[in-house]
Image (cartoon, rainbow, N blue to C red; front, side):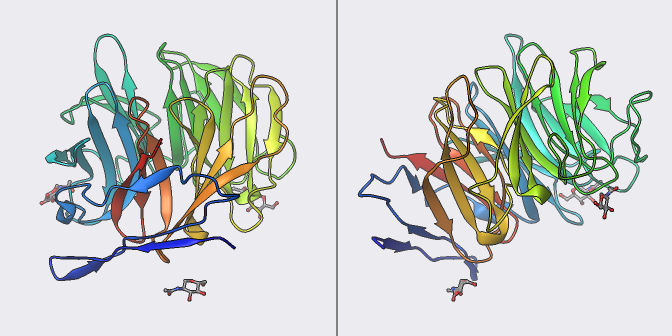
Length: 326
Ligand SMILES: *[C@@H]1O[C@H](CO)[C@@H](O)[C@H](O)[C@H]1NC(C)=O
Ligand SMILES: *[C@@H]1O[C@H](CO)[C@@H](O)[C@H](O)[C@H]1NC(C)=O
Ligand SMILES: *[C@@H]1O[C@H](CO)[C@@H](O)[C@H](O)[C@H]1NC(C)=O
């Protein structure tokens, strides 16, 4: 196999940080991404387990959700890597995070899988960490829509219109995908526990493409399922790329040509070709980025302006930035 090994070990504050990347260009293809070893400038800010990351590309900000006792739960960096501020008020165990940009401003949505008084919720914060909206019934795991109750909501995607897609959840009693209106009413709901068409086992991440399709990382079933965003109708499923490990994340590149899928247990980022409008077919992996052992990439996000990919790694307890090479 044609392969190049690029290993970088950084000694920071006396502790060894995992920063290694194995690159396997396929068929002489150009490598698509390069690790930005200078991001962030102060990695010592990562004091907990870094579960999720979200980019505000309009304002050049990167939000990181981390867990742990007596650690700030949300860290805010500039895209250049400078640490700006943090907050932890009302956040217990962040799982997924999403930046919603509108003409009026930006806000940060977080799914919280905590089991305390703030958990089982999907919450909206101002860029400085002021709580603006709580969906779900804090502290109560449930399966109901009236009142709205989640059980370990895993991830969400918010459209410019304010319509929200939630995958619920990360191993609780629910295995479902819900679309809510901008005033938080159910538009449609799909999915039950199982491995049949349209069923889920741990729907772990969700995103919407530019062609009206909703993509769900159906982690436990080792597949990605695709739905029509207007009706919730099932459109197709990909499983060919996930025999070794299920998909943890779904995020598109800025040009919507590829899907970036983290596979946590094999420490890999799979770069999959996104199909044009029409048949979903099966997945085609155009390239992969092999991370160091025990890095455990959990969720990712893409800067839709610069194309940079940020990877939240639970094992290495850090977020790394990969910049496109072309
Ligand atoms: C918030 O973080 C500070 C340390 O940064 C910690 O002392 C405090 O206990 C935290 N609060 C919560 C509610 O976790
Ligand atoms: C889902 O179904 C499987 C059996 O197919 C069962 O083992 C599991 O406990 C179920 N999970 C939930 C959350 O009901
Ligand atoms: C990484 O993991 C693989 C598979 O478990 C193992 O073969 C290899 O020796 C490990 N590499 C290091 C540097 O630990």
